[in-house]
Image (cartoon, rainbow, N blue to C red; front, side, top):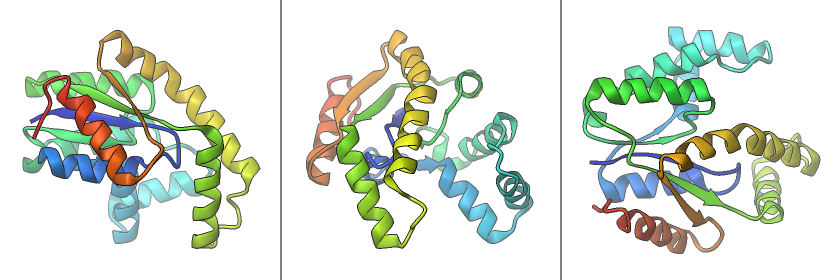
Length: 193
């Protein structure tokens, strides 16, 4: 079973594609955002710690995120493979994940990078904001988030590109077509169901 990451700008369809690819390859999709939200909802100790951090307007520190990932990847369903969505986000997290994989006697097999036109992503996110009644998601706010994504993610993509792990896929188009592109890109690297 493969160990994979999926990266792409907000609105590129990472969550949708992560679920589909994970199902096709029979590995769990692990989303740090989903794990944080679940812990917050259940008011676990972790959820309370994360809530306090987010309420203060801070980023969840690497140490806490790493602890969460280490715990999640140690669970039985992830013992032979996983697809991470939303992690790693920093060079320190990349280093931590390398250590987790080394400890497991495994390695990262591929990084799926969804590429999407900025204007199309803005259009998608504005439509989603309207559907969900999120008046704070204005075009200016969305474009700032996209700029932050590019600034923070570009160095990580470069790390993975140096290792020859990046599979670039056009993330625009019907969901089924994007899924097919991802699976074809992974198959070219010998990663199949």
